[in-house]
Length: 316
Image (cartoon, rainbow, N blue to C red; front, side):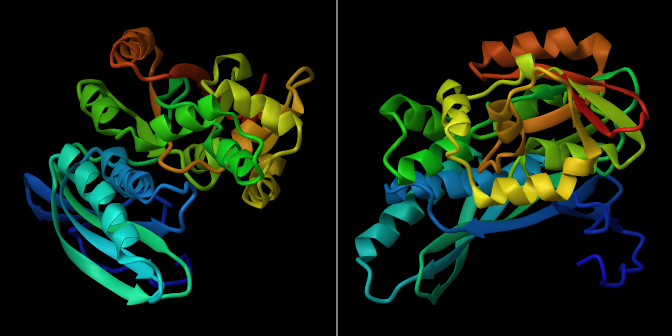
C-alpha cells in the first residue's frame, strides 16, 4: 500500500499513509465516514465464539478512530463440504456483536474456500474535528492500555493442549469484549493518539504511534496481561507472528535488565481484538484509569512519553 499514490482529495482526511486503523472521508463540515475491513481464520473451536471475536476485532478499528459504527457487511470464506450449521453459528456470533455495538448488519459476501475465514467491513461516522489517529503522542503523556495482553500466546497453548480452562476463558472474555465501552468513556478526554493493539503486538503498534518523534518508557510491571500467558511464554509456547514482530521492531526497543523473556514475548505477542492503546496528558491518567476499572476492564497505565532518546521504546 505504501507504494500506491496518495489520492489528491481534500475530503480524504485519513488514509493508508500513516498505518492508521481506518480510512476517514469528510462528507460535510460536521460528518465524516470511517471505514475499515478485517477478517481471518478461527483461533477458537466454537463457531459462535469465533464469530463474536471476528466482529469485535473489526469493529475495534472504528472505535480506535474515535468513530461510532453504523453498518457492517459480512466477509466469509467457507468450504463447500462443511456443515452449514457451523456457518450459521459463526454469522450469528458476528450479528450479535454488531447489534451490541449499536450498528446494523446489512449483508455481505461469501466465497468457497478450502479454509474458514470470517470478518466484517464496517462503516462508521465521526465528527471531522474529533478524529483520533495513531500519531500525536507528546512528552508528558501517559499511555493507557484497556485490555490485557497474551491472547495470542494462550490460543497457541490451547492448540497444543497446554492452556488451562481458566486461561482460555480469560482470553475469550477479552477477545469478545467490545472496545465500545472504553471508547465512549475516552471521548470526554483530550486524547493525543489512539490505536488498537492487534496483529503487530503491543510494541509494534506503539512503534507506529511514536513515529520516531518521541520515546516511550514502558513499565513492564504495570502491563495488564493474562497471568498464565507469562508462564506459557517462558515455556516457549510462542507464535511465529510474534517473532516477525520482534524482527520488525526489535531494533527500536531496549529491554532493561530484569525484564524477563516471558514479558518480552507478551509485548511482541500478536493480539486478536486487543485493547485500545491511548496517549493522553498525565493529569488525566488516574481519573481515566479509575473509570475504566469501574467498567470492569483489566487496564493499566503502562508507560509515559518523553523527549526522543536513542531508543524509541525503553522497557523497564
